[in-house]
Amino acid sequence: MKPHLSIVTLGVKDLERSAQFYEAVGFEAHRRSPEVVYFQTLGPILALTSWDALAGNAQLSPCGAGFRGQRLMSNFRTAAQVREAYEEWLAAGGYSVRPPADREWGGYTAVVADLDAHLWEFIYTPHEDFVRFNKFGQLELS
Image 1 (cartoon, one colour):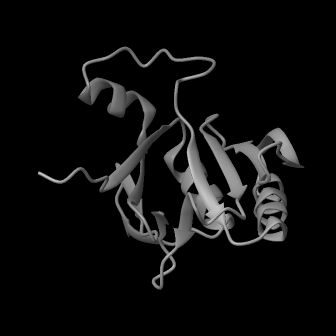
Image 2: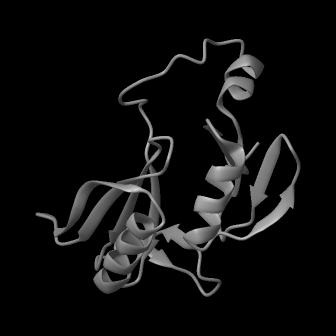
């Protein structure tokens, strides 16, 4: 079996409020029910569902605070696009974890969090020897 990532599901405290947030930053809901909202992306599908239901499905406690050992990334073609996405997320109600800045390895990044503290890193890297966008606009390893 080839490794692949099909769907990323985020547990949220208020499904409707979180769905509105993700729509405000450019995601388009393709399927919606009272239990889950699905967004199509260039990569895996993004799903939002109840925090408690997601924990219950995994037979785990819903108590979670602080860093959760994950970070989602969105790569961009320019540093200006990183800044634009960062500002868009703040305007929609997300919050800054690390403002946009040049990085020591030559890239440009910012880290934001959504309404439920899920971390997203926006990144521009000029080094195509590591990753690049293919003809379909998807990121691939070089």
